Image (tube, rainbow, N blue to C red; front, side, top):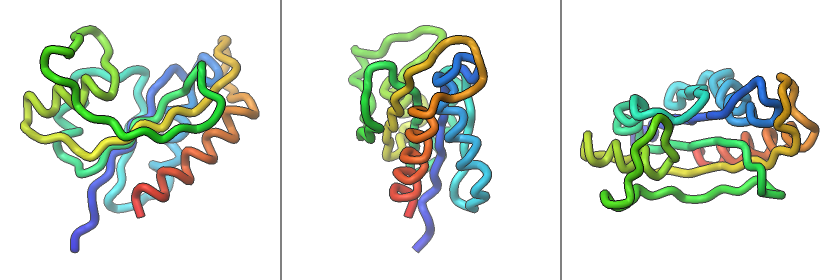
Length: 145
């Protein structure tokens, strides 16, 4: 049996404190050097990622949350075509929809939302965010094994 290919997409702004959670997680995953797992750090989700999504079995989106209190793992599905909202940046659902419509393939997809408390200018994560990053990495390990 072949291993599933996994793409971890961590997004957010690393110079806005805890908004850098997603990119921090993606960088850590990249450091694992697993043959079937790759990651991308992005400021925001952009349409160009749709092609990459169409080429993997599992996609894991990681983003900071300004409202959550715990690290959440949610399944993500493509939107109905009529719900698609085009703009300069997309959410995970609309990006999956784009992959489905353009390439006729979408991966199994998950969103990990990690709570943050400090979104001011700065490159350091809060203690809350650091704890959330650790939990998010554990959730990713569970999803890919």
